[in-house]
Every structure is written in C-alpha cells, then in structure tokens.
Amino acid sequence: MNYHTLIIGSGLAGITLVRELRKIDKEREITVVTADDGAFYSKPGLSNAFAANKRPEEMVLMTAGRLASDLDIRVMANTVVTEINARQRTIKGSHGVLAYDQLVLAVGASQIPLSLVGEGVKDVLSINSLADYARLRTGLQGKRSVAIIGAGLIGCEFANDLRLGGFDVDVYDQLENPMGRLLPPVAAKRLRNRLEAIGVGFHLETRLESICRDGERQIVVDSQARWRPYDLVISAIGVRPNLALARTATVATGVGIVTDPFLRTSDPHIYALGDCVELDGIFLPYVMPIMKGAMKLATTLCGRPEPVIYPAMPIVLKTPACPTVVSPPPAGRLGHWDIQIAEDGLRALYLDHASGEPTGFVLQDKCTRERVALAAMMPAIRLK
Ligand SMILES: Cc1cc2nc3c(=O)[nH]c(=O)nc-3n(C[C@H](O)[C@H](O)[C@H](O)COP(=O)(O)OP(=O)(O)OC[C@H]3O[C@@H](n4cnc5c(N)ncnc54)[C@H](O)[C@@H]3O)c2cc1C
Image 1 (spheres, rainbow, N blue to C red):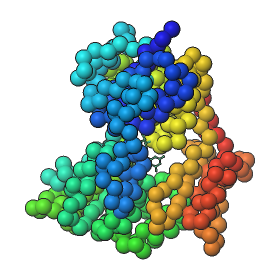
Image 2 (image 1 turned 90 degrees about the vertical axis):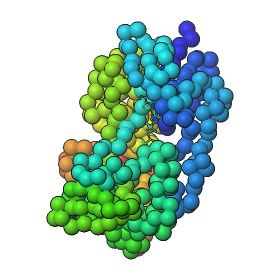
Image 3 (image 1 turned 60 degrees about the horizontal axis):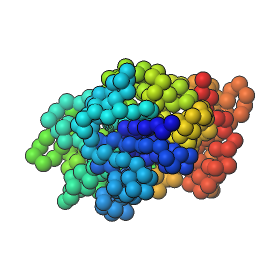
Image 4 (image 1 turned 45 degrees about the vertical axis):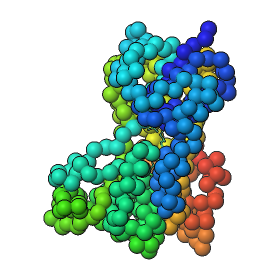
C-alpha cells in the first residue's frame, strides 16, 4: 500500500524525517506543510552567525523548491495548519483540507513569553527562527548596547557572539550562575569569568520587573528598582512545545506532545518528533534527539516499529570564550560532581551515589576533545 505521510513542520525534525524515510522508501507520497517559507537552515547556527557577519539568506541550506525536487516530496510553504480531524484523518488550514494516512507533528517549540510589565516588553526580540535572526540584524543596525534576559545556553551563546560582533552586552538571570541548571558551579563560574574577560556584563541573582521605553531606548528595571537603558533587549528564557494543534486532535499533551518510545501519540495514526515532543516525561529541545528519533520513526512509519533509544547526548556550547560540553546526568539520579582542573581545562564527572559510575560530565577548554570517548561511557537514557 502506498501511504500518504503528512508532516507538519519543515524544521530539523520534519526534514530529517523526510531524509530518513527516503533512505527506506523512495515511492511513498510525502507532503510537508509548513507555516514558514520552507527554507532549510541550521537553527543552532543562529547563535554564532552575527560575529561571522552571516546574512540570513546565506544561512539557507536548501530552498523549499529544492527540497521538493531533491527529496521528491510536496512542500506546502506559508501554510498554517489550524485543526486536525483525527477521526477523518484530515488537517485543515490556510490551504484548505488535506487527508493523511500517517500524520507527523514536527511543529517545534516557541519562546516562553516574558512575565514583565511595561511598554518596552513588546519590542523584546527572541531568536528561534531564521526570520527572527533577520529581525535581530535589522534591529541592531546602528545600535550599540544589548541586554539579554536569560543566562542559559542560548543567552550565553548570543552574549559571546554579539560581544564578538562589537556590542556592549549585559546578561540578566535570577540564578547565581550562567547555565546554572546544567553546569556545576565551578564550571559555570569559569564560563562567567571568561565571558566577563571579553567584556560581557552579568547581572545575576537579579529579578527583572519591567521594561519601559525612553524614546528609542528600552529601560530594564529590576525588583530593587535599579535600571539601565539599552538599545535592544533579547529574551532567551527558554522554549516550550507548541501544543495548540495537537490539542485540536485531542492527542494527549503534558509539557509536550506525549509520545511512547515509538514516537506515537495517543492517536495511533499521529506521531510527533522534535522540540514539540515529551517522551517519558522528558523534554529535550536539542539536535541529537531529533537525529536519533528520525531514524527510528522512519523505520516505524515504514511498518517495522522500532523504539527510540537515546544514548548520552552531550550539548556543545558555542561559546568560544570558554569551549564547554555538557552531558547532563539523568534527572533524579543522586550523585556528586568530581571535578579536576588542569592545564588543558576542566573535567567534571557526575558520579552516581548508588553505583559510583559516571552518569554525566562537563568538559571545558582542550578537555572538550574527550567528549566522544566520554559520551560512549555514559548510560543510555532509560525510556519506559
Ligand atoms: C539560537 C538557537 C541555538 C541552538 N543551538 C543548539 C545547539 O547548539 N545544539 C543543539 O543540540 N540544539 C540547539 N538548538 C535547538 C535546536 O536548534 C532545536 O532543537 C531544533 O532546531 C528544533 O527543530 P524542530 O524541527 O523540532 O523545530 P522547528 O525548527 O521550530 O520547526 C518547527 C516547524 O513547524 C512549523 N509549524 C509550527 N506550527 C505550525 C502550524 N500550525 N502549521 C504549519 N506549520 C507549523 C514551523 O513553521 C517550523 O517549520 C538551538 C536553538 C536555537 C533557537
């Protein structure tokens, strides 16, 4: 039988899945419906593109037309899907109605809205797409000072990149350290010191309350009524899965679209992949889970169900001021960090209290070369 596989979303998840499907099945009908223009680009590249002076159009790896012809698929770009009728197996949107045999939701995640008050809030930028990056470049023209809200992975990467691009950059966070949720304090402080050494300012343990306007400038105000003016404010406080569409199909959702290890949702004909997924209570908005998931999902969609297995998936920070790799220990596993600092950098192993075995690691500077060898020693993420 020639199935019609319909994929909503043309990000890394949607397009990687198409590629994996085509390795197995050259014949099946595949349609990708996407709200954006369908151009394929590397999203991780957005947070180190500014210093390299990359124009948005230079970041496009393949246009929608090229994807369609090379992969022999139909791409419906600039098409927002608003509703899924799971009983009739159709989707509805700005294109009209389309039928499917298998539906894959690869709809990604969106920036968490800021809970701040003030007339400057609406002008805060977040960068989660190529179009956002284009807005950032336009917004920074002729400007000098930037505030970044959030000192997590994306905030630190943009801080490093924009500083290298010649901007005055301040980073705000409520936590005591940058990357405070992923790095042990010693590693986080090294990252902070290196970013400070290139001129990034940190305002940590700082709770922001409002963003006001003074003409062209945005005034960032904290809970102690301290304030500073900036030309531009960026929010990097994290993303949350896009759930609205899945809910129209009454597919189970929690933090994300809930799937089993086969990436199947509570509806047997609907699957999910990428930043929109919650698998076994885990939300992993990173590249590696998409690559691992796409391979298995393609096999499953072709009639040979295979569960996803997530090995340890180290995250590489694009902070040249302090090269850092982190492989977070599984949530809920008790242990402690064993940290060594030598000439070649920092090496930290998270040792499990019960077994004494390493279950996570952090590497900095030249030690980052050990990431592949160390990742191979880490336990796979256990999925029910
Ligand atoms: C700046 C930045 C840097 C990053 N750096 C790293 C890194 O170094 N390492 C790493 O592992 N990860 C990194 N990530 C995360 C990584 O990029 C993401 O995990 C990945 O790109 C998500 O891909 P996706 O396809 O799931 O979602 P997306 O790329 O968000 O794609 C979602 C797609 O769904 C479409 N869509 C949504 N709703 C609808 C609808 N209703 N109708 C039609 N279409 C719809 C959108 O148009 C889009 O095409 C970074 C993310 C950002 C923002």
